[in-house]
Length: 81
Image (cartoon, rainbow, N blue to C red; front, side):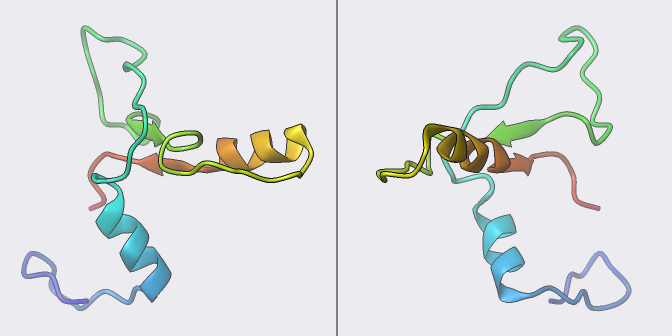
């Protein structure tokens, strides 16, 4: 992948390229920052939680497994550089 702002091309596999491309358009919920008066993009916030929104399970799997799958669908929404 080539980005005009970077000096060298970036190696990125297709799955990660698709995931990163869709992170803004996928349904989800971004909780408020820990300190709403002073939001900081420090790698701990903002994260979008996708489980139950863009990803919905209809399966006979155990409820705790479904919860584990839902809780694993978290996407960082801050700057990637």
